[in-house]
Length: 182
Image (cartoon, rainbow, N blue to C red; front, side, top):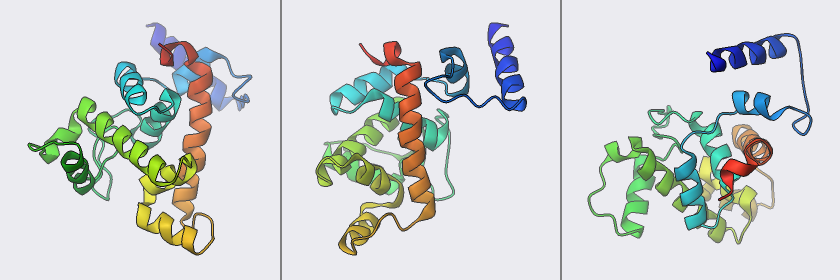
C-alpha cells in the first residue's frame, strides 16, 4: 500500500510539472523515480572491479530499468544488456568454459560480465569513464575511430546514453548514498 501511495504522489508531482533539481529533490521522490534493485550484486561487482556502485546502478537503470529479462533489438540481454558474442569473449577471458546464452538472463552472471566489460574498457581508455561508457554502448571500434579522427561521439544515441548514465549516476549517488556504501 505504501508503494502505491508513493507512486501516486510521484505521478501527481510529475503531472503537476514539479521539476526539482536533483540536489533539491527529496530522496523519497528520487527513490521512487529511480529504483535500486540487486544492490548486493551492484556493490559486490563494483567493488570487485574498483567501480563506483552508483555508476553501475546508473548503467543498469539506463540499459534495462533493472529488468533481468530485457532484450534489445540488437540482441543484448539482461540487466546490463550484454551481447551474446561479447559475453562469449568475456567468458573466454575470465576462464568460463560452460557459457550458454541463457546465462545472460541470470542477474549475477549478467552484472558480473557487464562490470568486467566496463572495467576492461575503462582500462583500455586509460581511465576515461566517458570513453568507456561510449564504447560499452557503441563498441570500441567506433570509439577508436572517433578518437583517431579527433572528434567527439559521432552517434547521437551514444552521446545521449553517456549523458544519461552520468546524470543518473549523480541521482544514485545522492538518493542511495547509504545503500551503495558498505
